[in-house]
Image (cartoon, rainbow, N blue to C red):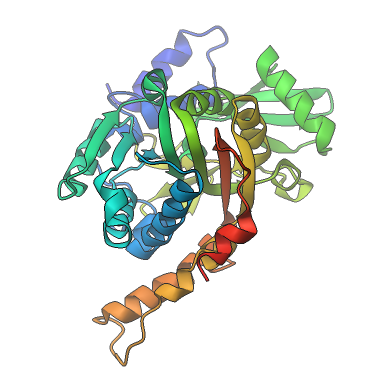
Length: 379
């Protein structure tokens, strides 16, 4: 049986022969045997389906590491933890650890690294990537498992984690909101509209109370954010949560100009909007509602203290100070030129710099983060 047959079989077991899109996306990405993220195939980098800021160059992780070192100091954490959720191959954590070892060796010696990763394949990749770093390392296969341990003091980092949560699709019609479900017609996956469940309908009502939307508009609703925020809140006793992802505040995310929503698929570095092909072989993502993430975080004891575009955050965190002066002329062999090109790519307002947002939340820290002072320290 392949993943398409397995999904069709689940559809057949349901009344009406359809499953919510969120369930389809969950199976396509996270099924134990067939899910995209659970497979042993490369996902990130030139041999995968997409690039992330962390895979553009190690300088991204170096810059985040400098910020994390400052956050540990601001919170007066003596035995710090560096937590990464959904770290994939471990490339980001590896570059951050190298920078921490270089810039703050005394802190590095006291460090505990916690990695939360659902994919066995990626946990193995992380172990290989971090094998040279002789710090205490702990792996968890789920955030729920990590939250049960709880009590950590440090910084929790995620880069492109929330965008991979299964989302519910909803479409506004003349008779109200409908949920997009997936069925099978003549051997092909097809969409049908159904009445939304109570939880989804409540979320849609709350969203529309703030942001009016025209008939025909389609949006994504991530009902997993609330539980994730609660679990992060239980995991962290004292410190900060740094979330980096593409998304926006609710009023921008659900603006009428985005009438078709933000759902995207990535297959061999080709972006498209059809989740019903290459099932189990392609990434499926949706923009993050940072208003919801902040609100659920607040309820979990995580208070928002910073929110800005990635380009501005990296610039104010000293990214350009990491540029290398050189006299090289061959762009194909020059390490310095490659590094400097990466700096520009990370802050490109039309690319990674403008599409991604950085949110920092704090918990258990006596004083609110003074962002002006925080950024001055990188000058």
